[in-house]
Length: 339
Image 1 (cartoon, rainbow, N blue to C red):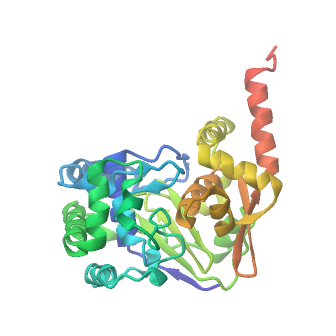
Image 2: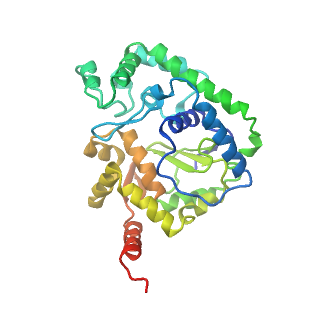
Image 3: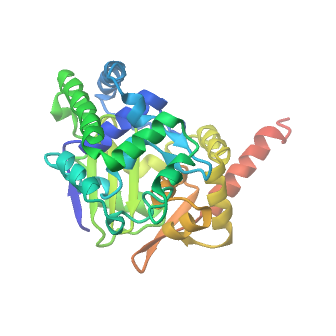
């Protein structure tokens, strides 16, 4: 197992998720994990202060307001800037600002991550392609400005990141509190991955504690690496009990939230026919692969899909047993006579 464990949060993911929460509110799909450590209440109080202070920063709406496009893509200017060329674990905090400016200045379509900016037609009229997006005019102008005058836009985003970091440091959190990753055992990780059908092989795994997501486990799956963000307020044992820690009612509520989302429901219906890998799903749904990954995070958290790796591709399939179980539980709650 090629595993690297960090005792500091992944800076880009911390600030991106912080900005998202400040503007859009907490993610609607969440599961309660019961294995909370002794510092959980401290993290909760500090997190609430962080959000309250961060919301006062200017230009948050410009960079973090998320739009759902006509084809169900999720568009956020911060993601547009940050994800065009790099995966999250590839960001170098010291040089990323100037590196991104240079990348956009020397923009070449062949350097883009696969499908990252699929909603823009770079082969034809870029401006016309952006104008057709179902977002407000100011957001369209921000995208155009980023493409043609990237320095000001990227400096603006990183100025927000620096203010986030200043507020974070002002909380004076004892970094010894970030011990959620220190006691992780390889066997616990294997059980965690095995539950979703993915055996840990030689694929690199990067593990970070997370303060912004202090109460969550977040698994990011790319075909050539995995990133696990472990909430700083959780016990390391939450890895092995994560999938069993919710009661039936919590799982049902989560299941219904998933089904109410058009894109997630469509993914499940596609997987009913056969197992599919990320880019295959993206093409079938006319979405970007990062958007598919976004939806997969929610489906994995709800135990609604299985994962396997084959020929360096990540394949997804339905967890039919769990879905059948949820349907039966719903039938019991709504239709079965308790008497």
